[in-house]
Length: 383
Image 1 (cartoon, rainbow, N blue to C red):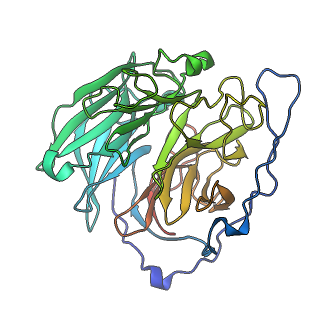
Image 2 (tube, rainbow, N blue to C red):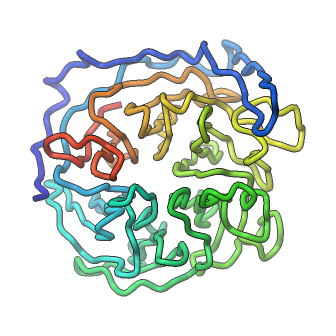
């Protein structure tokens, strides 16, 4: 049964017991996929003038928003403070109404097919709230059917989700690597991350939407100004991006699953090639490929959700079972620090709530985790 757990007051909680162990100084070397040797390119050192002194106070878990969820995947906040949450494997759309955040089912994407019971990654994935929600009441969803991935839009009115309308279909679907994150950019266009379905060559094929970050209109058309007119891709060469976030300089960041060795945090630029499947990590030596800003060993990350707040990126990690904080106030990302290591299990999604706190979902009921009592849950974190 889903239930709301009373939110604890931040004033009476301390940061005791938090874990912060990585300062990014022991960066792993770089693996060039298919090469008999490995090479390393050191990460550029940020100068002291890159950014002002940062507040390094560790984040605190100050409450639990909801428990008893099943693989919660996407979070979108409405203008009134309510939250829309998707469950990957039940394919239900939930509404958590502020301020109590009681959980209510408002609809289901009936064509969505979850594969969590088989260890797969497909299902009902990301959600994005229209920038004009107060006028159009539109939500956008990314989900998997039996044969493909789709992006749809649906109206939410009077506590009920209307029948969705497909705006983009034909996105290749796999048992793994389906991407699924949605985010509206400051330009008003919808950005969507896709996976390469386990077929790495698709990431380099510009004629398929797989292994890309897409940029589309709210009607599903390729957005004006894309690298190729009429083509929805914005960047390519991605293995499986599950995190998208814009910072206060309108820069787009993406968190990406590596294969066996290195997960990545990428700064996304128009038309850039991020190297998969030729390269995993940094240092290919090929100027036509974009290096990641940060890399992690896969047992420390397996990153999914990403959010920006007050100069930091916050990255939820699945296999790593932790929340990463990365300073992006300067010319490049720096000083990754991890928190809550192993305390709450797999972390899937991180979102900035209207009150300036973070909501972080666990993903222990997704077929790969070790559920604790009350899982899955949404943690309330004071950053």
